[in-house]
Length: 312
Image (cartoon, rainbow, N blue to C red):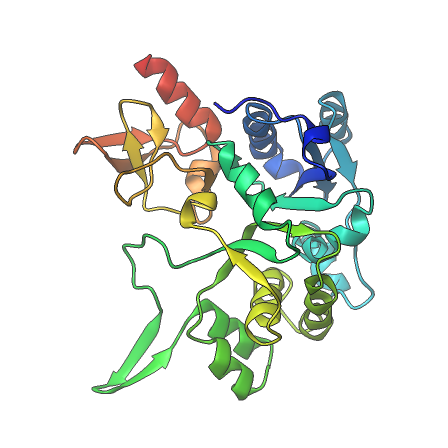
């Protein structure tokens, strides 16, 4: 465990932000606890459907409860049906939502912090006013790039960026330039308030967001377009700073470890695509261990803490 930070020692005002509705509150509470194990940096939560009692709990923890930012071009019907979509939309307005902070670190509500040094490295990487983010080029059992083979020698790219750029009706010249690029996962990123990428992100958002069914994925597509098409500055961090698997448990320490040798502890755990694991601590996933065995674990902060307690 890394010792708590003192904000005044960093020479800049820092905040860690996430977003939450009432269904994700338990995960958000675990995320906050995991952050507080490592730092006393200010925490903010964008409220997109929490209950009054949940907001009171956050206030009691010293967490700032923030209103989302909904631009005029946002799809009102989609937001009315699913208010939590405002979280992804608001990510690209954090510099406007939080004018009193210099460094803004976003963590999705389905993440949690295992190693506090990952937070420090993200903040440090964003100091030069580039976007600090993790490209999805790390450890993968699955194919790195989705393709559909048509016949020998011919294939169709089916990457996230290509598919979503197509849904957004972007020109083929743009789709071709980003189609084979690694996804920049928007679940974890850090930006300086004065970073030049902010208006570029919103330029793409204004073009993409009004188009049907783009509200959920527009944040990642906008980041990719700003970096790959507009050449905005980026600082890449390794996959330990936004770890999506494959999952590996170090039985000697009770921590989730990186697939790559020497299997260092994962910095930030991201439980994307783990709906059953996120929903109940009783649900488990059988994963490999560093020691060569297998273990049934729940990947949530509470699940790993409970596992460590049983082993201790």
